[in-house]
Image (tube, rainbow, N blue to C red; front, side, top):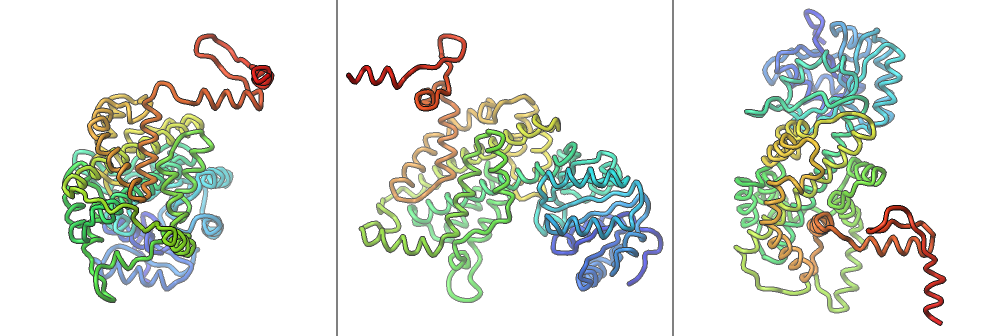
Length: 488
């Protein structure tokens, strides 16, 4: 391995797809970088890529000691390894050669409390620690991701100049990176970003299902519809790649590849963590939760195949009613339903971030988060600019749904939204994301809910007490005794 002519500016350990691409991105921006991986073949592969992609200032090392010692002091090392024990193992390996004032940055999808634990442990050794969410997949890592660093502000200052250049750049908005806040806030924000992503993907899948199953649109027509949608209010990375997917033919047979993909969705855990955190903080996140449930149900492929046989035998086909629909009207209705549901998904994610920020004292700026998600990341979308402006107008906004602009848009779209959900229900097509988003909106906009009955039931069987609408204080009624007397 060729040694660097002088100490490099930064190091990166962990050269799977994301690590390789981020290292090449950093080198391409003019920062000499040292790289290390436990299996040395990945090191050699990255060095070859750096040579091929423009003779970039990237230097590979096969052992951790020479890797650490090749970096200028105070040393900054980004780790991109699998969350959990591999992170602890890598820290142990590297910290043997680090000195006081050096810094480790975890760029993986780590559970935020692990980051907080590690930051404390590192501080005892005199080392600085950051947990940094990185979004954008391999393409984003190579050409400009959205990055969410949290933890030691001093450590952020060490690397700020690099992050500002390496991040996605959005005209009139700047680099898609900012110091998120203290502790595990960077990881937490990235986790919720992924939860919103789950919701977004599920809503798009439901739009596809309604258009294909009820509207009978072909893949060519679907590609055209999603391409058109990507020119307006739904302009986003996920809508763009959806259009691309519908246009790709199967290389192993006839027809389109999307129709040959098995209908089982995988997951790595961040969506589950988001829903668990929402429950812990008593924040309603039904759109995100329904997307997680949809993934669980998709995993029951064999059971669903058997269930389909049972219900077919009872006279229930895949689609319950073969309705004749106006295609043009349906496409427009689904577009509006998708947009309105999407607002609910982002509202839930932002409320969850705010609740955690209050609990932990992180002082997170929701508008700034919307800004750094405008480019580089998987949920990048034109309407994030509108979310940023909503929080700029009112940083204490209780819910995106009540921002005057978003409220107006939902009111304009709610008839189409209801038509799509009703059509799906009558056709026997599940739209859990759109349905739960609509229920969320309908619940939130109502001054009075049937929760009074639920609280009365709780007081009846468990003496949990209740409040009244007309008198201050807590009350308990002997419901059972009164009911028994009334029955005499």
